[in-house]
Figure 1 (cartoon, rainbow, N blue to C red):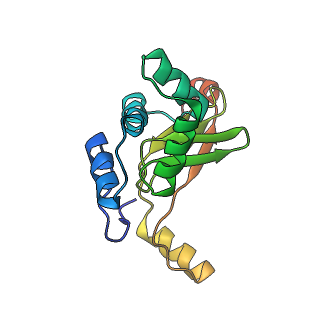
Figure 2 (figure 1 turned 90 degrees about the vertical axis):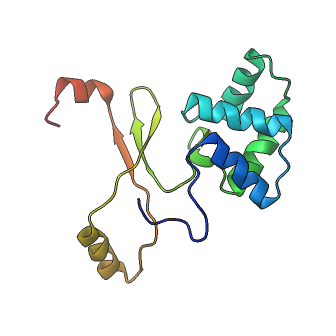
Length: 152
């Protein structure tokens, strides 16, 4: 979506994320850098446990508590994304407005940037009396069905 967060440039790279942390006055400890680097390298939504496991598999010295604390601090400040799911929280690298495609086969969440037509946004505003400044849409589907029925 093209509506930008007021007064803030979108975070589109690891460098943007690090710069935004500095702008906020957040300390950039090595553990915080480890978490941000991993999320930007992996480009997928991961649980805190998956982040901890992957960092330790790569020889990064970081504890469970440090992973959780950094994820909470980064998501609370809007540096990273936190997606609430029934089975727990998942964290991703993109924090600017975007939508998700949820694959019900793989449980994977994919980020998509789509822009709704202006007339559709006006219709929502007219129905609700709320001026739309931001939105995200969650799509759900099965990979197997998409492959079997490409016309959808």
